[in-house]
Amino acid sequence: MEKTIVFALNSSRELAEQICDILGIELGKCEVKHFADGEILVELGESVRGKDVYFIQSTNKPVNDNLMELLIGIDACKRASAATINAIIPYFGYARQDRKAKPRQPISSKLVASLLERAGADRVITMDLHATQIQGYFDIPADDITTLPLIGEYVKSIETGNDVVVVSPDHGGTVRARRLAEMLNAPLAIIDKRRPKPNVAEAMNLIGDVNGKTAIIIDDMVDTAGTLTSGINMLKEKGAKKVYAACSHAILSGPAVERLKNANLEEFICTNTIDQTKNHDEYPQMKVISVAPLLAATINAIEHNSSLSSALQNAIIED
Image (tube, rainbow, N blue to C red; front, side, top):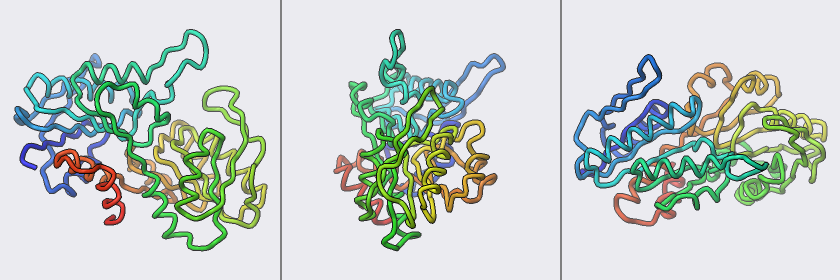
């Protein structure tokens, strides 16, 4: 992989280091500077001329700073004659603004896609997009990789009984929950809820049976954990003997960690698409699964023009 360079920006440095360890290459030299007035400068510390460049950067909080770091880094590589520029965005910010839910609203995820293309990205790789149709907002190759097999393999390792039931926290997550249920050979339950306003959800009814069973509630992201904790309370009231919560993206804004601590969970399972070093110190019941093997396999498949699906399957088996 002589022509491959992996750069880490501020939000995903530890993940980028893990990816490079798997690939057996050195992390690219890159410095990100934030000036007093808020401006950002990305300086590349080595030549990228004729190289295949990969930026690892989740656009989580501070969303706009992390997004601008990525756009400026891409622009720097474009102007330095990189052969290809690949943006690996494990957590894609603005993905929840994927449509006009009300009149006169923006479609911000489409705007972000246009910005990445205009900056000079040749390919975008994401993980568990909140809305998979966002892939269609790009006119360049866009691959969305699922973390469900990683979560499924971990759940199999800790719960081997036949009394497991997978729970979707809402109707929108049914497909995701069904896929995990198939992996675990377990039944499916669905929480029927309504959301009166953003970050506020009210659990209403449970479709399915969790009485006396171990419930695995699965979602793509957990932000303030309000939706999750209301769902956990309902499952406990319906007789679940144990409750695990799992998600791809642990955003954990505001009171989220405190809510999880008080939720009486067996374990909170997430991935490191968003760095969890600080949260894990505060909340030891958090199990963080690394997505580095999947992303390293993705880079390797792209560089060798091989099947991405086969590479990802092999990475899960090896991991």
